[in-house]
Length: 566
Image (cartoon, rainbow, N blue to C red):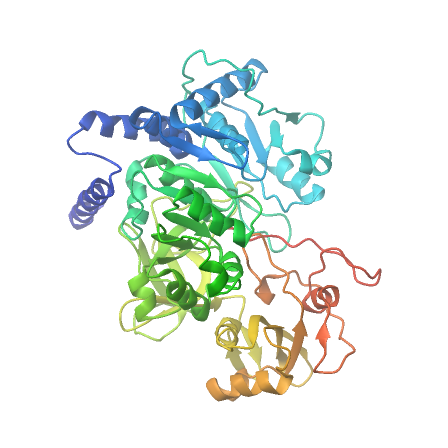
């Protein structure tokens, strides 16, 4: 490194320490706790290290709550020591790899922390996996054992007998002292795997300074209450969960999402931060202002959205309903954080994903070669982050330029230095020689009062190569195909008007809320035999779009919709 690079790194470190001090994560007047936090992170990793730190600082504060159980930080620390020791008594070691396939509940948290305390490698499985996917990932990652909820028993049966099934029942276990791992085991988050088996992204966090990238933009503070609606196997929820643990916050595990129950939990627990994917926000806002007003939500200070694109109209509706509390995260599983939009960013420029926080570098490159800095010009997004992965667990990596990693997304800067995402670089539709990104059309359709949801994809066309097809979930019964086309025609260029418009009952979505058509499997799309003004039933809609969950007709084969985690 050059002297200028060393000086810049030193300045960044000082700023990161200041951010963490202001957030209450560290106290510069207590060097003993600073040393303890750094040592815990290096040895235990961010999950168990955070529990260990908060058990020392806030032993009697509630740590995790689900519908059936609650544990203080002291209780969580001790129960996971006992659980880790019981698994070691079975012969598992720091060299073992342990998978978890669970809904969000206290037992899942205990399993995650116990694996880390052993120094073993943790693999977070997507609860949407079918048996074949689970078996493929287990084989590639070399699973020695798995923790699985009873509802996933049939999927777990696809695993070989050599993969031990572990119990997370801690009711009969006794705490006999702390478990200290020989080293940090790390954990693996899975990518979405929109085609084939999801890839594994290994993670190890060596320094608590990495947390500054969140606290620089999101005002999480000690003593708050975090409602985790997004699943913990999802990178967004996991990152916010770890930060919340580190601050000694109380964490409410929501489980299967239910909008009224989420509002009731905000009222019951005085929730200060809620972690969601955009689909969840859409369901909350869809309840209507009168229904939402039945719940006391004034405690809410942060609505942290990630995992999929947040339409401008939806984000603005959230701010209108709950106040300036929306934080829109952008990043991917491989790079980690890229940018975060604050409420001020969103109000100034609805739809933005904001600016890079401290310690993060974001650049745009046109044609993956030429640096783009002029506002409005599009390029592929590249990110520099200290916690970016070093390669997939099965081999391979992402494109790199100047030490920065590609997210695979196309974006542009505005005049205020805020980033906007226009689509995937493999998402672009070329129709009649014109390049079209479907996200722009989807965002527009979401602003129509008579449209609840929308997705736009490209379908083969003999004359144009591809033509645009829009799938619309109507809010009102009187909207027509011509209404949809005219609305796009009035706001966007002529070549962005969908040639086909299909009304559907629902859009198939991943566990992270994604519905972007080009992210779905490449599956034959039969032409619907119906008039333009009729609505496709849910099953036929999935077949036309390219995804079928459980088809009702033998002629429409089933494919598994795989989530893309961030």
